[in-house]
Image 1 (tube, rainbow, N blue to C red):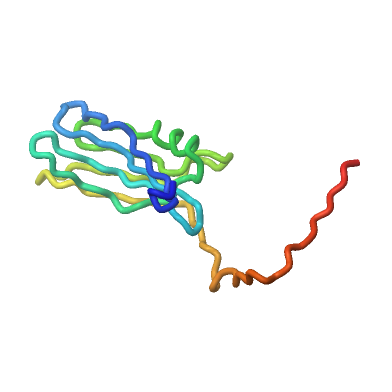
Image 2 (cartoon, rainbow, N blue to C red; image 1 turned 180 degrees about the horizontal axis):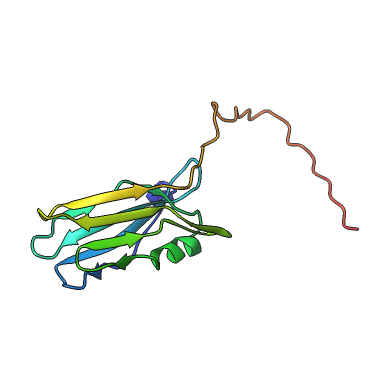
Length: 141
């Protein structure tokens, strides 16, 4: 984790479109400071390798939930691929990343983000190395 600057990253395997001209995958990462994942939908041409990448959408915050989201990556014909970014924690499926091939062979991207997260505000905690460590007492009843 230190080597990756405390960010978790994972990408699904590439999946082929029905006509095999394109491949798509979901690329996830969990950065700081809010701990929620971000996902991008990537679509790549098999002919020349050019890729189109969607804007990032909010994803869940555990690897199990990211994998659940990844199962929603589906092709709807040769020119449309969809992904639900947020799956899990009892919350209904939320958001949509979609790529549709236009008439001029350009990918039109849709990023509908239904989940809103806020990072804690302020300057953070002022650490004082000389501050006393509080005593914690617990008892079992």
